[in-house]
Image (cartoon, rainbow, N blue to C red; front, top):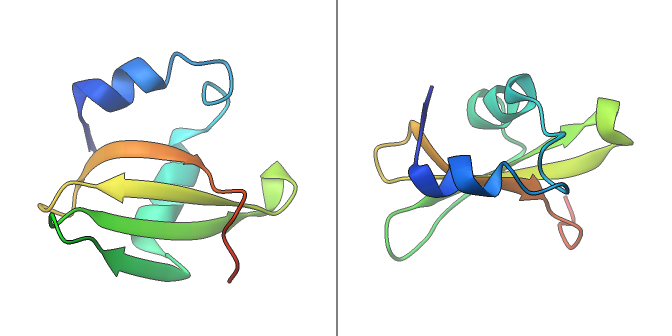
Length: 78
């Protein structure tokens, strides 16, 4: 799995430091929803039972494999 420098910097934030790489992989491989943005980036969501059932949003670059961002999306409704 590849990561942008932006992702690596954001991962240092206290609210994102607890997001496990396995959860990111789950969202990339088994999303419950996917949306392609106008700029080509791909948003994918997955439920994370281990995190109180919250939904993790992962933003990928247009190559579909480089993670640009990952965070719990409080506004997501499946």
